[in-house]
Length: 380
Ligand SMILES: Cc1cc2nc3c(=O)[nH]c(=O)nc-3n(C[C@H](O)[C@H](O)[C@H](O)COP(=O)(O)OP(=O)(O)OC[C@H]3O[C@@H](n4cnc5c(N)ncnc54)[C@H](O)[C@@H]3O)c2cc1C
Image (tube, rainbow, N blue to C red; front, side, top):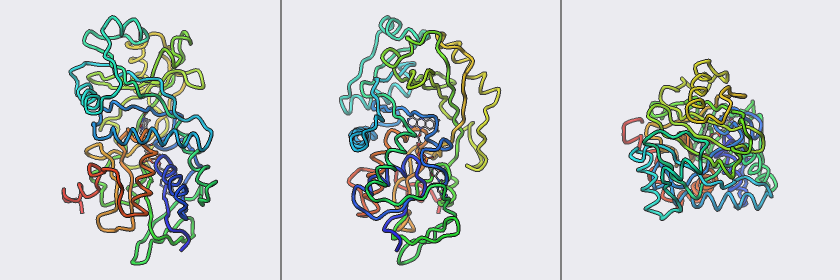
């Protein structure tokens, strides 16, 4: 055996898995096709939002609370500032599904929040032009993560703790037998007892049997210069999600550099055939879409984007990830399909992956994410 556990893909989930395995003093090897902290996958664009009043379902709140503790742990082990809490705004129609789900999470876990009156909202968050039915709810435990820096931090820490990392090494295939798993990469063979697949948008190359329940989507981010820098600093302009009928989007304050970042929520219309068909260039339609949003909702920004980039993410049919052992192969564990909202929980996902690989089970409730929910629908 070359190692006990092999990890394929050291982006968001793989980096945190390596950190957790190394902390547990497990002999682990990890493979990344590009450089560590690269900008081509689901974690590019420097930042990701952390939210706790969770519109994707109240079941995530306990995971998010542990993820938060683990982000702080990673910071203290590395000395790197990775998570900044700014509070977060949820902007939109209070009768929307998003607001209802956010309220359910708040009620179930008694989360710190505040619903602003229209007058308070207009006064405090004057940067946002509100429509007649819009309201603002403040999520008290929200902010941003430095995504690529977090990946580099976790992998560096794993190496310090003894992990072996192969960057710029693409895994071609894996084969599993009674005694272990063989990983084929760049003409070499590696033998491990178990393998964890954290290949993000490329995961379908390893779990082709799930393809009909997965789709790769293209997500575009755009960066804008403010007319007045002071109005968009993080103390006055927290991270936000804004729910409109046709175009939900989210944004970040000026962080490190001097630009406000906005992102459009991906829909089925942003579907790609697969990860290989990803194009980084943006279209003039995408530029105009962002310009329109800024002109309408954020008049304090210059509406011509100063930078735009496209990224990828793997979505499942129900927008919950796939986490667990493959139903037909207990040596292969998969964590993928985070459907546009996985970064904030990556630390706890790393812990779950390590527990599954080492003990065959995890103390977290991950029943919602079971791979076999798709088997039951007749995938395999
Ligand atoms: C634009 C955008 C904005 C987002 N905003 C947020 C947000 O604000 N908050 C939030 O919580 N989530 C957000 N998300 C979602 C979150 O970023 C993803 O859920 C998360 O990054 C997915 O992690 P992953 O490990 O599955 O994939 P990735 O981070 O893409 O990692 C997969 C890795 O596997 C590697 N790999 C693939 N195949 C191979 C192979 N054969 N051999 C070796 N290496 C391989 C890839 O190179 C990559 O590094 C956003 C996503 C996007 C795209």
